[in-house]
Amino acid sequence: MEKKYTPNLWICIIMDLLGCASYAVPVLGEVGDFVWAPISAFIFYRMFGGSIGTFGGVFNFIEELFPGTDFIPTFTISWILKRIWASKQAVTV
Image 1 (cartoon, helix red, strand yellow):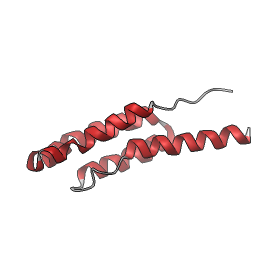
Image 2 (cartoon, helix red, strand yellow):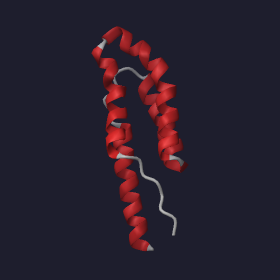
Image 3 (cartoon, helix red, strand yellow):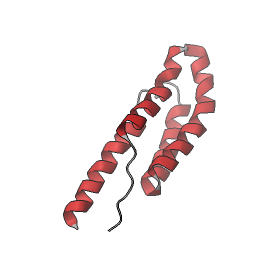
Image 4 (cartoon, rainbow, N blue to C red):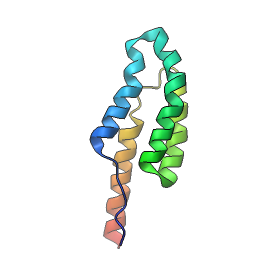
């Protein structure tokens, strides 16, 4: 049985904090989100891979582009979901 990769929780938290950093500079932050959104989506896809990575990358991209939605901890929520999914897979095997 192959062990599936789960990203480190601390890396996910740091990525979410980087996404929230636009709140530090109100006007420039929203402009920075246009640069950060595709980078964050790509990192998300590479970290999680598969269907979670694809869906989450698209969601993360949209979430970063829309003003006022940066507070959603997309990386951390996905880490939790991936851990729950992995534990359910381990129980059924």
